[in-house]
Amino acid sequence: MNVLDVRDLSKYFDLHHTGRRIPAFARLNLALQAGEFVLISGPNGVGKSTLLRTLYRTCRPTGGQALYRSALGEIDLAAAADVDISLLRRREIGMVSQFLRPRPRVSALDLVAEPLLDEGQPDAHDRAAALLSDFGLKPDLWAAYPSTFSGGEQQKVNLARALIRPARLLLLDEPTASLDAPARSALRARLAQLKAGGTALLGVFHHPEDMAGLIDRDLPLTPPPA
Ligand SMILES: Nc1ncnc2c1ncn2[C@@H]1O[C@H](COP(=O)(O)OP(=O)(O)OP(=O)(O)O)[C@@H](O)[C@H]1O
Image 1 (cartoon, protein in one colour):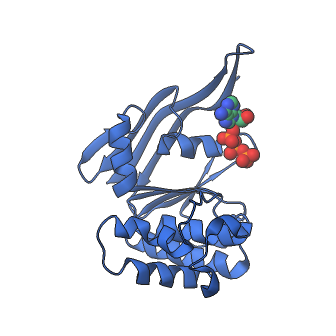
Image 2 (image 1 turned 120 degrees about the vertical axis):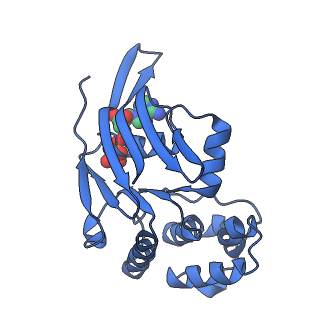
């Protein structure tokens, strides 16, 4: 059964100050099954990030449907109420971007453990420590505040936080940017584990060869008509 059925999904940005319409993608179709890993590819500016943001609903689509089969039933991500989207983000749909949003006076370990603490899981900190160790963040930094970390260190915290809980649908926007080789292979191992557990994955990768053997299909985007 498909986790996601995208039908004729389009996104145009209306620039009100110039009266221009910028196309991101148009009439896109995609079916994604549980445990499937689809790579979104294409040149710069073709709408890859916008597609992920539209599915995560940081962006509203201009038209079409994105039918997501949640544990609670089918919901159109293109039209769902914000409150339902928030619930899905907490429980089922994950998004990994290139940037961490550090919070003042929250340590790296607490930031990573938080999604499990919210669920009342008693081993949250142990699991957070294990994941930070897998991604190669030095233990000296676990109690420190990530706002002072390097780009690669912040990204390790970002990945650990986003991947600590299994999602049914995981959206990945260039998650390997700024990661060293050991962290890239730790990411690959974690994604393999999630895929084997049935997570559907859709992502954009700077170096898709890092994910060789895991990616099932390629979805090449082409520029839509202006
Ligand atoms: N908030 C916005 N307002 C107006 N135009 C936008 C906005 N966000 C993206 N765009 C435009 O939409 C198009 C697609 O952008 P997007 O970032 O999705 O491309 P991409 O394929 O991810 O590019 P890259 O490979 O460079 O990361 C671009 O022409 C971009 O300028």
